[in-house]
Length: 191
Image: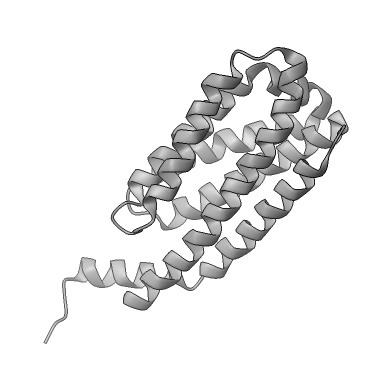
């Protein structure tokens, strides 16, 4: 007796492969939560330090996008585009962290809008496989709201807002990755 089509067996094997790496999302989640704690501990943070941390955050987000792209069946190209954009942003941030801080403070709303839209799209893509897809959707919607709110702030206020919301961004990403890890593990057990 055959228990499904060839495509279904391949999908189950791919799912088992991803599920075997569920711990990777735990590592990412812990990393993001650690970054959020570091950022949110600063009272008067060094502009260079914040620029470097933001660059690292972009690069880790790019790595996550590329890992998901490698295993995604649908929307692979979208993860690739966002991955490339995050790599470019991360490299630029690390090359010139002081200018990154000033530029990010100026375009903070636009960056939060991009991140928020990415999370919303990612949530809808994962909707069929993840019963907690709404967590990513909620985080994305919150980032979009923050994008519009920060767009109207002055530079000095943006500098502090940038610190706080970079910390919140990292915290939301960490919690989402931890939840995603256990969802991926559960899917692997079902496959």
